[in-house]
Image 1 (tube, rainbow, N blue to C red):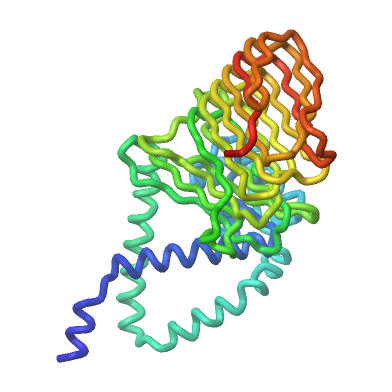
Image 2 (spheres, helix red, strand yellow):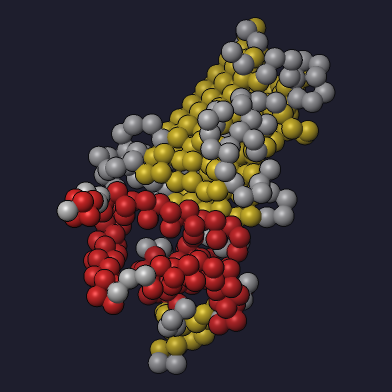
Length: 365
C-alpha cells in the first residue's frame, strides 16, 4: 500500500522538467569541451545515422538557408562533415558525417552512454517498452511546442531563459547583433552562480545564442531577430542578460539599439562598443582593464556614462554634441571635442562618432 501511494504521488511533469534542464546543461558543457555550439551538436545528431540534404537540415533546425550554410561551413572546416553534390540532383548538397570525428566525440560521451545503459538494465523489457512509449510521445510533444513558440512568439509567451556554464573562462566577450529595442545587461551580484558564465531572461520572443571558446577568451554571441527585419522586440516585461561578475567582460553591440542599459559596475570592463547608433544608452562601468575603450559609431540621442570615482575619461567626439555635462558641469553645444577628464592613467578611452544630442559623464552613484 505504501509503494502504491508513493507511485501515485510521482510528479512526472516536474521530473520531465528536471530531465530537460539536466540534458540542456550536459549538452552545453559537452559543447564547451568539444568546442561545438548547441546548433552544431544538433546537426551532428541528425546526420550521424544517415546523410541529409542541406535543405532538410535547415527545416529540421529551423534555420535559414544562409544560417545552416554557415553552420555546415564550420563543421566541414573542422572535419566533422563532408558536402557533396547529390548524384540524383546536382543542385542539391548531401551532408555526411565523418565517422572518425564522431568516434572521437563518442569517447567523450562514453561515460554518459555507459551510465545510461546501466540504468536501462535495471528495468524489465515490459518496463522499457512503457518508458519508450512515454519518451516517444514526449519528444513529439516537445517538437510541436518548439514549432509553436518559433512560429508564434507572442507577447504572452512564457519567459525564456538562456545560459551557459563558466568553464575555465576568465575573460569573455558578449557580442549582441541584429538590433534591439529594449534590453538590460548587468553584472551579477554575490549570489550569481559561480559556475555560470551568463544567464538571460527574456519575456516573449527570445534571441538565439551560442558560445565559442577561444584560447584567449570565451565569446557569447546573441542574435536578435534576423537580417533585414525590424529591430528585435521582446514581449511584455523586462529582458535581462546577467553576466558573471568574476569575468573581465568586453561588450560589442552591432545593429543599433533603441533603449540599452549596461550596468557592469560590479565587474571589470575591458571594452564597450556600439555601431548603428542608439536612441537611449546608459552605461555604468566598473574598474577598467588596461587600455579599456568605449566607442559609439552612428550617433546617439541620449547617452549617460558613469564610471568609478577617480577614474579618468579620455573623451573624443566627432560629429558634434548639442548638450554635454561632465561631472555636473554643463559645457554646452560643441562641434568636436578632445578632452581628458581626471588624472588617473588607468582610465577609459571614449570615442563617439556621429554626433549626440545629450551626453552626460558622471561618477557612479
